Image 1 (cartoon, helix red, strand yellow):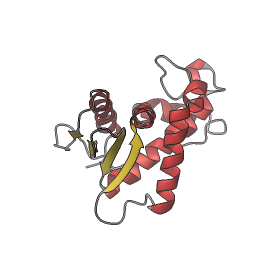
Image 2 (cartoon, rainbow, N blue to C red):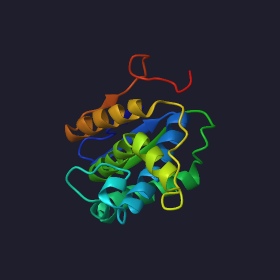
Image 3 (cartoon, helix red, strand yellow):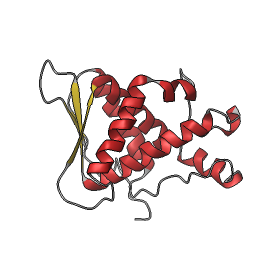
Image 4 (tube, rainbow, N blue to C red):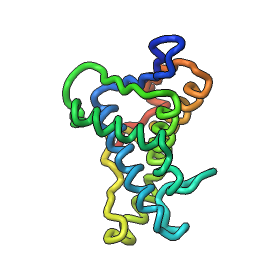
Length: 171
């Protein structure tokens, strides 16, 4: 997975992913969106995502977040996130939209334990199951933090998955 800025003077950044990363990133983004929507009405102790400086309502109402999630849906309609196919997938967004996209991905990846707890205790209120992803969610949480820092600095970043940085679940 890598973050690229194709042209200087252009505010667009590309997130380049393998087909498996595209499937998992899509699943995490959709889960993050559903979890934030649930959190809008959930008591604080039963919220799924952790919020630092904003509330779930603010995140979902944010123009850049809405644009990023709409772009994700358009891309998923063109390139199904089934993990199949070959070649890299490029997801292009303006810088601020990419920032919001990486924020919701980071929040979703970091929420696995809380999501399992909330879902198992109240599946009728929170029917969303944490995505079944091959790569340990800790890898993704760290990768999204690193990508956010690179984006903030207008830097390019390529993230490889050495064994010390990634764990394949059940493997």
